[in-house]
Length: 280
Image (cartoon, rainbow, N blue to C red; front, side):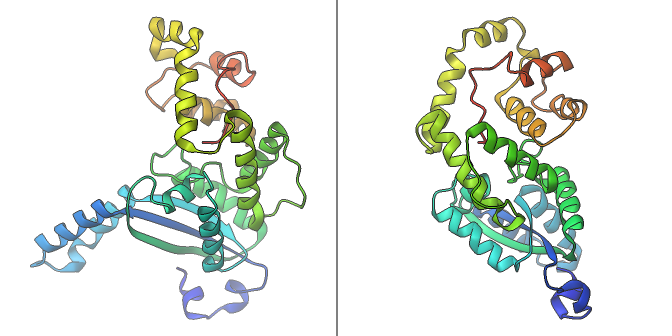
């Protein structure tokens, strides 16, 4: 964390009332934690400082990562995450905290920036999430939507499509609770459940029964969207990304050769209309 935040100097800038922190959480599995311990034991005759870059890189490559901003302390914000997790939220970070992806070995909490203004926090979060933790771009990412203003825009569009009515102003520190509510409403609307196993089974069935999809896969699999690409395109378009930027990312996902014409048809709902527009 920033030294000013840790040691309490330069308080007017770093700890001023109403300022934001940029934080991230990383989650390492028990298996990977064991691998690190084995490496450390095998190299115990060397200086720990010599091997430190290796362990840091290993942790970065193999950990799941979630990035966020808050006006509260990171401890208070983390308690909110744990509350949503305990209530059965299906957002990826909360599922990871429940140990759905693997048994947790190490959970780290890092304050990367402090004393940020609203504008600074939103701009930095948007860049950092896109660069490191947006799930559709990075397998280890736990952020399901873009950060910053793009994320706020997505939530407003997601709520509109779902029929969700806001009862209070959407703010950074209530964003997660609102997204959890919209997510639950959306999943129950499409699947009559929010149970991920049943949802995945339902999507697999839709995928298998979509005759147009089956025919096209048989004739030209390389030029068909994957489910991951469909989700990414819809989410990023709702977040205000340009079609050119979306296409650039899609073309490196899942080794699929996607054209702008195909992307246009997807976003207009002319293709893959049977695949639910959900956040999973």
